[in-house]
Figure (spheres, rainbow, N blue to C red):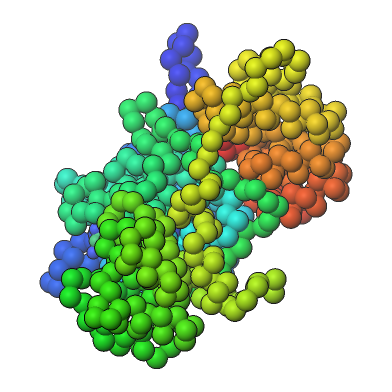
Length: 548
Ligand code: ASN
């Protein structure tokens, strides 16, 4: 492995840094475009032509071949490595390209399926994923993927650029490098969009500028992270985390063919809306209404009647606002009438999220435990948050200060994450579930009241060996302690300094209960650990460490 030469007493010392592994899935977009006789078109060979010649993407070390899965077939791909980032880590990456590459105006649910299944097939081989995509439909793809990828445990970051990477002045290098570093460094288990130094939750975004580098906004949700001169400032209190034991899976078939989107305007004729609602096989409509969710009622409420009749026929109609900021509600009489007609209020969903969420829900089979009709079940799920895509009013976070009074808890007397982590380690090692919960909750209360690194800071913490609380709990003795950490959002995918996953440690310790639990939670052996398991003895202990 290459490294950094540290100045010292005259003897050059080589410092080695761990590596994370990221897969870049290239779908096309301006970022990889070049002029042609027919205008700008995407060109292939991005890794060699655009990344290899740039020192920020290539530290000129050995181009180690990586295993990946392409179209269901195991392949060997070329890799490059970044110089060490300010997090003392290299990002080693390889790329898989769509064929043909697309202007994103031509992406469809077929392309989303290709991206989702590629992530699924390579999930155990990489720490994170970057999807290169045109900006025109980027917010739609980010929204669609957020629904298609369920119980995601690793970062998936979509990005692109407004100018080609081959142009002299371009946003491409910043967008791509920022995405790579975040995907390889931070355990943010969400589908995100990174643009102009900002990491957004993908399903909250919308494209707001056709030409500015500052092209995306997330009007109803703060960014998940910002890149500054000091590094990446992650807003951990916003980052979603697992709350149940479940494995990563993909809903690969999501089709926008059964949904439509109509923007209300002054004087819109009810017959126009009716003709859209009578398109054969239409099953859902996104109605972009005025302000807080209002539409003209028409003569004798004719528009409302057209809508009520469609709802009766089983079509799901979702009300979202034409305003980029704010939410819809039945506050005014016109909005109230839409609600009475059976329209679902989409709170603060963007049109992109509403359209892709409805397509996703329509593609799911009816739930065996679902009450009422499939349409009623979908309507109910439309106004609940599945992936943080809307703000549920009842779910506004509120932090309470620890109650005043005599301080009897030793956990609450601990100061600093280091001390709390040590106490947590003791609680885990002694299998003490009550103490584990007490320490985690005390740390959480501290975070809430002091505005520190965000909730669950202890679950992202690692000791000097890179072991997280999940690594420690994987060794036992009490699987219930491990379970408590997992349902509170700890990652099963973190690797310690020796490059080992919690699952590997549990397996080596012969702790069957923990092995089973970690597998149920989506844990898998890292690619080099598999070599060891199968007697291959491939390089455990070299390279990456825990992703924190
Ligand atoms: N037309 C391009 C695309 O969406 C725009 C871009 O990427 N900036 O593919």
